[in-house]
Length: 92
Picture 1 (cartoon, helix red, strand yellow):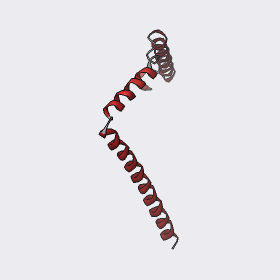
Picture 2 (cartoon, rainbow, N blue to C red; picture 1 turned 30 degrees about the horizontal axis):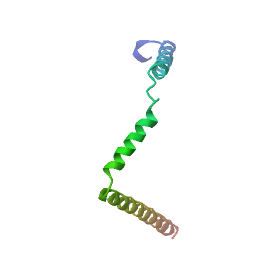
Picture 3 (cartoon, rainbow, N blue to C red; picture 1 turned 120 degrees about the vertical axis):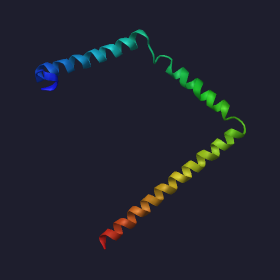
Picture 4 (cartoon, helix red, strand yellow; picture 1 turned 90 degrees about the horizontal axis):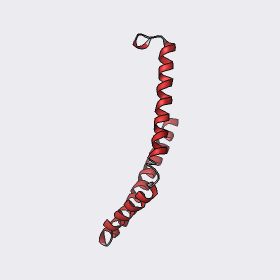
């Protein structure tokens, strides 16, 4: 028995805590509407990042993205070939 109370009492308490937590979060979202301007905030941050990357930084960013994709493809191909090689060695 957790905390010296019966399982019945403990489970009731847990259920009440979960319901009150859900009710509290719903109340916050109904009263304060924290997600109402989320799209606007995301748009502002994207514009801020694009401004920072303008000019030569933008070219560097594009190059970095291409290199990252190339590196990820190389890792996938290497892992795949190692897996196939290991599978063939296991059959011998």
